[in-house]
Length: 237
Image 1: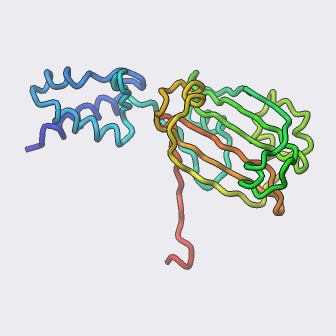
Image 2: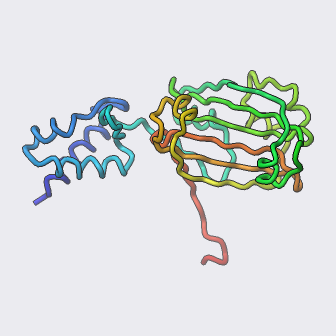
Image 3: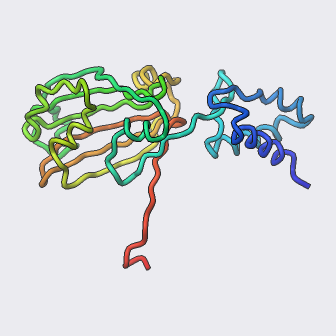
């Protein structure tokens, strides 16, 4: 006999997969499910926990439980265009430049990037929006001695990352992916509660040993995922 929590899980999963429950739709509360299935709250919670771990629902403290929106996959090893990824997945996309300043590297930034202090950089903050909801904050440094054309570029019709790929082909890149809690500024821009989980991709690219750009892209944890397809090398066989 199928355990009750498994039955609850399967029935909710079926409603989501069939489209009967749409992305963003509120899921019945735990108490409503307890009354419907005549079971304990622990049984209901067990089913909802599995659904949340599989990314099918999002549980928001003090707000309720909702059907997750389809996530956009981001290939881990490639440098790709957020807009193209969104549009290929059937979503509407836009972006805006929030701040744009020509400044100098701080001593801390120079140490982190292994660069000379006081080098001029273009400091950008961009907001990427998918289906009308903030999908990513992009905080970027562009080294102006490596990319002098960026000084006068407004990025009005093309995002900075795409523009850079067209202007300065990179020869080396380093990615760091981690989970981070949303700080006050990030939560406000991404329409989250402070402390909610986010996915952060930090990337530094070089051309022939010279830093081109350093960027940190932060996504809401329930609206994005990183994915990759790998093949064994000869040594792995």
